[in-house]
Length: 399
Image (cartoon, rainbow, N blue to C red; front, side, top):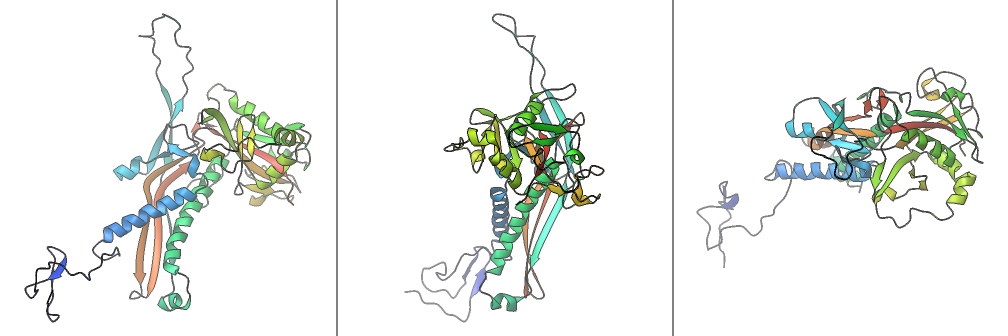
């Protein structure tokens, strides 16, 4: 039986236990003690790391583009680099984009030694910025009034904000538009990485010179023949820049194209698509890239994505009427910008992964939760041409 007095307890910091000279018996610890992970307590550092890991996993798992992200040089659609997160210095991250080897090599017993070729890389820099967001509860009375677990919800919400920002700014960068928080400026699609026009439901393609020339809601819609047209554009190399490199997915070389809901509507209504997709050709494929895909057409995996950029011409020249200034959409015409993507269509450079901070205000009456990360998001270019993405502008008809 353990006998002890309750009037004198001493804390032993050397062993982290309650005890002292008045303990009786052979026990060296208190069985009623609990282990907790609370900020400000014994395991403060562990609590912070757990939440920082969770917020990053939450953001990455729920990010629309998360499954397209790979390390630098991996051939992924979005390349990720973390150099500055390890060195903790610098505000610019340099990416090296691979240039394919096109030399013919040697045949049979021809000598290879001494005839090796040098690897070539494109270098491209992107600037790091800090992104921050926070939630603050009004006070204990507010928390008492509702049954909602507001503090845990706050942590989830700031994690969701991180995911939203990653997706939104990746989309804007690939679209050639400015970020939604001023972390990068607009970089309009380069001369050979933009296509304007559309097709009829029967498959007649019309290629035009600018958004202003997309002037028909029947002749300039999205469809299978548009996909074929843009793919040919992607596969043709030019002087000074290479073709858009496809992604290697389960042994197949495929491009990925993101289209809006209404472009998907026109695609499904086209004659060619109906005939070619009576049976979905992406069923049963295990790779996550195929999840939710509309189908594959001419080696292009089609995804419907509802956060692409759209504009509407109203006969004026406001920001809602153009993607690039001085190229206003035709009056009465809705235009969507879809994205035809290959390798290195976008980059994510991290100087700091998402970090969650918990803080109390007003004598611990108010609870606050903040997240911050240091990241660079951008669209690689070489010789003034976008490297891995083609913007495709077509008309659409809303319901």
